[in-house]
Length: 304
Image 1: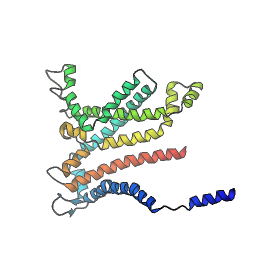
Image 2: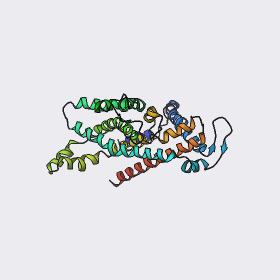
Image 3: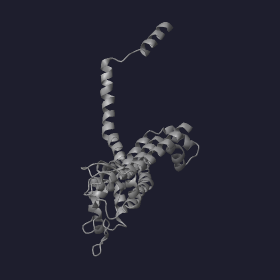
Image 4: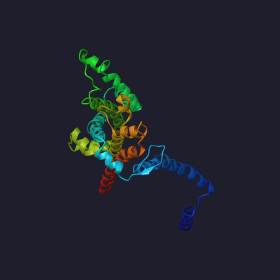
């Protein structure tokens, strides 16, 4: 019997792929890789190269070195406000919307009455695109016909929630957080459903309060979900575009890096090289946040 078992093991180890297997692997793996290279990494590398050139999309491409980046940081007044707004977007989603989504997930997981209704209602904004959320924000925060001014009775001297550059960024952030909160809630709710109940029971037997049980027992087990939520929050905040473009085309206090990329590449100026430089800055910041976060999480997994 050991001889037969060893022979069977050797036969499994020396099994070769047939031509049909290779064709299936090429189709299932090769085509997605090629599409990813063509649609994602190809344009990304092209943008990096074009960021060192001056090109209007029609004429000859002129190599200018780092001049685009020098002009971007020193002679382009819209850049720094847009960068600050992107960082504010990240801070608001990460420090306000994400914890609130976690709180809603914990409350629903505890089995409150009508939890199914709350879950469906809070998740409903997730199915809407940010452009639609922007149009809804206009209906709510509009100066003359907005629902908010009508509710608070501010009709004689209505507040221009979306026209005032000191207020509109916060109103748009509330609208974006409305959508982001439901997404985070569903992710954490799925993670909470997977937590072993015996861990909670053991903590209760040891005399831990509900808050101690959550922060010391439950929350550490949600580390994989935290990684996903963190990456999604960074990506959502840095790629924000639709909602501000739907409100006022990303101007008058709603400038974002993604809007500047669009205005320079497909706008009247057609400064593709300069717009690519802004895109490369946005890509670098995004990769910096995501890679740093993932490296820290992987190190944490190894330490455990």
